[in-house]
Length: 456
Length: 134
Image 1 (tube, rainbow over the protein chains, first blue to last red):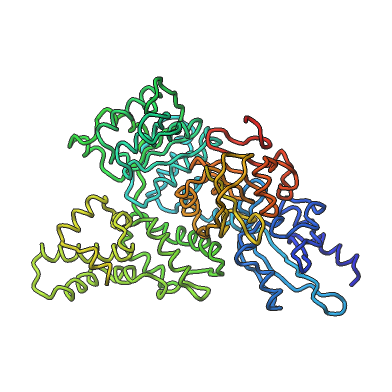
Image 2: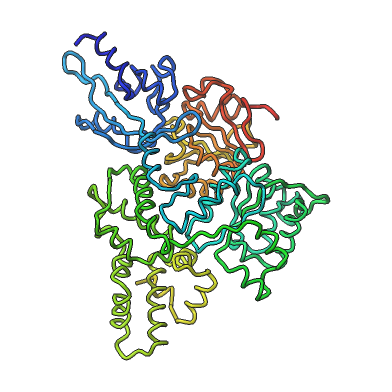
């Protein structure tokens, strides 16, 4: 085949093709490559391929480098490139050696395909989708139906749901569909910071406000100007902070620490909590006026156990993402894995499912994730309550009364969660659906010695 | 103040999202030379961990190659001023930081004309070219 014919064919195909010499400089670049990367041939030729292609594989998993060192072609390795607007474009890559007429290796050829449309089709499989939120579950339809309307409104939103249900994902989705979508999305976990730190984080401070304040610092309200401020774990803030927050929400103005005049904020506020705010109001630990100020539009996300229809959809999305990140060509779950997923109670909700899939992708050495890639608690727990009882009985002997059995079961669950999370109490509390303070209390009540457990 | 410049094979790393190391140095700001440079390994798989590491090291400026919108949001929301889509030999880029010439076309990734160099910081959004508003 002569050179003209080869060039005509390369120009007519929809796959991007470029070739490099042995120093990684681009020597040819076809029309489809221009379209997918957004870079013109004249600019690309003569430059380093990594700076033109900008793929996640360049630095660590370059398929062309593997081909040049082994002589073997690589077929359909998946990854992404970053285009000029910062969008991640999913691609699959195949490589081959480039030889001259004498059979001498003069470089490599890379063919790549834009998988964006396939990705879109995969997303359309979800019966309902709004931004990053997708669901096939009737329990989520009400939530998904109200999101487009709520997103367009400037009103404060309260997102309720157990830990790990995706409250921040929902907040981010609302922001991305709102009028302030070009502004920043700023998130802060109010439960993670003591009062004084939370105040300076939220409102910022002026130089000289306290010892060590050697320059002005903008708070989260200032950073969220023209955008959205997400206040996570709003139910955990102290009464003093509640008063300060109430003032900002009512007046749309606040005073940075050490400032002499107020500053205005136009940030849209989205609050979230996994606690029962109404109960906290009755108990007197959450101000009623603040509750009514933030409880304008409440969105309650059901736990994963109440929308098991979504497990395949979510698991599939996580699989695609982690396979891409880990450069693995894992395409499916074995049927028994879904059986385990359906039977498990998912105390850590969607976050737990995400972590389980990530772990499975890392451990999996074949193209299909099997039962062997799942953590033991999923396999044990999905054997049903009997499995747990047997585990408790075996650990403690027989003849337990109901209260003791419950304590033992609780102890087993907590130790499991702690081990699973490398004794990170915050993460274990999230997995168990408990508040961190509650988990500390239970660890003390049940005489669980965390340090001894760590050394085992 | 500190500036981090992602590095791979003696050049600015092509994609910040998966960059494995960076040079961190003390600076008085853009247009001032880097002092006390050190090479630091970065987490590769997690954007959050990568940005958290930069924050924990007190980084105020980040110079990098291409980066995804997800990464950009994370970086800017942490009050780190961003100089993205930069390419070039690492020594040249360090010098260009010191003399304030990163806006020159030769430090742009292909396809990013000079005015499209992206310099972003929280609350100020995109600025066309470098050295404006200074």
